[in-house]
Amino acid sequence: MTDHDDLTRDFASDGPTRGPSAGSLPKIISFSALVKCGDEVWIEHGGSLYRLRRTKQDKLILTK
Image (tube, rainbow, N blue to C red; front, side, top):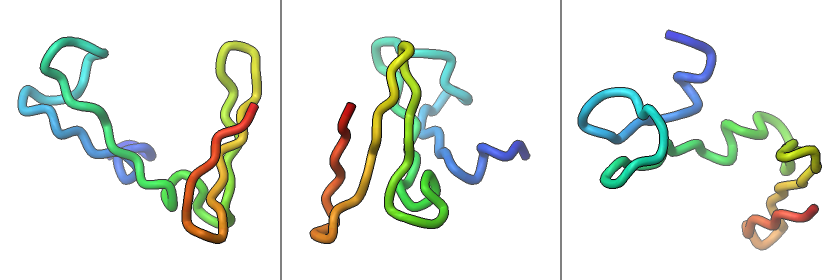
């Protein structure tokens, strides 16, 4: 088992997801597993940083 196996679940019936395709299901990652301790995580994508945080009302907000 790899380090990320405990963070993701693959619901596709044909084994590991090989990328987006018609009929494939997404991987599910719980927010609590993503942040481990705290209420936010920073994500780098396309040279930009994004902040994903949980509010006191238990909502998620993604900001650039």
